[in-house]
Length: 192
Image (cartoon, rainbow, N blue to C red; front, top):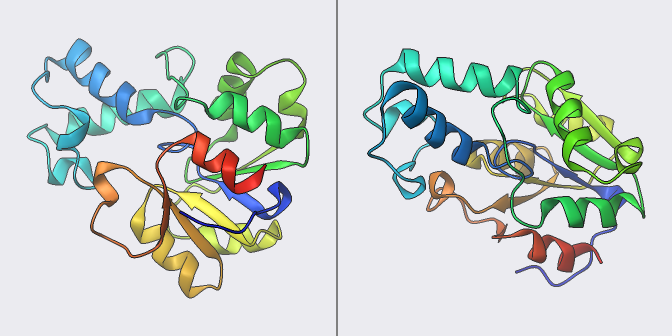
């Protein structure tokens, strides 16, 4: 756990796997829509889920595509505590979400559906469309720290001089030596 406080204006967040519980939606949709019902969150030990799950690549792509395009419609849920803490942070500074998603629209629509009124006015969404270009976008926003669930991204951030904080998930365990958070209460403690 980190001991020094980070001002919310200097901290950014990934969206999927940090703010939104994309893994829950993926697991649920694989089962409900395609009959793949035999795996749990702990079985997703690689960010590239097709490497660790016995699921057809076409199904993986179809499920992630529908989540990316229609986050509200598929019932994408926030990570526990994320909404309350983001609202608290947004009351102090602009919250920066930088996502590998190609389109900010579904993220903005989802945030509007789950956040208290007016909070979204102080959330900036940067949709970059790729996993491997986050350092540039993070630096453009003037951020010093970034919370992400993808270990490879955190390694890239570290090389670029940005302090990575890993949001602990089964797919990033044992793949880094960076500071971690396991829940949004820990993020609150970092900032507030």
